[in-house]
Length: 171
Image 1: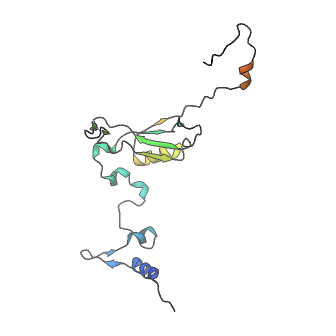
Image 2: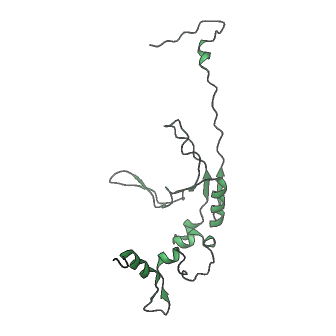
Image 3: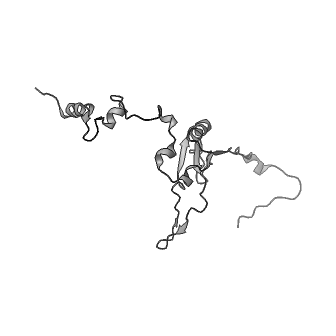
């Protein structure tokens, strides 16, 4: 007959509060807060929506209020399908004086701007705008250009055009 297994023991240990050594408050496991089994630490904000990302990122002040660009990416020229064009992306403007240099060993371009290659993806333009407004960022929206598909007709290769005879040189 089997008694409590290791999974039950671990679960029982994770839901119990262990008293802290220096403070008089009880220590709560992060997994319990996520599972709503225990309350989290007291904060001045009631919901996570009120806390801007730059507050917790510990980024320098000059990097915090940068304008963002919201755009719909274009189709890759290497593919005929429009696979990654159904989403909206958000990226940051290049920081002036970002300390760009060329790596002397390999020759790669380097930058001190840690947001240079970062982009966020959203399902809709409205989600991207709401996120930027919630973070307090200025944003610029680039509307996608409509795709222009020229009409193609195989029969036009054989249409009689009055006048001089068309010749096609193949070599």
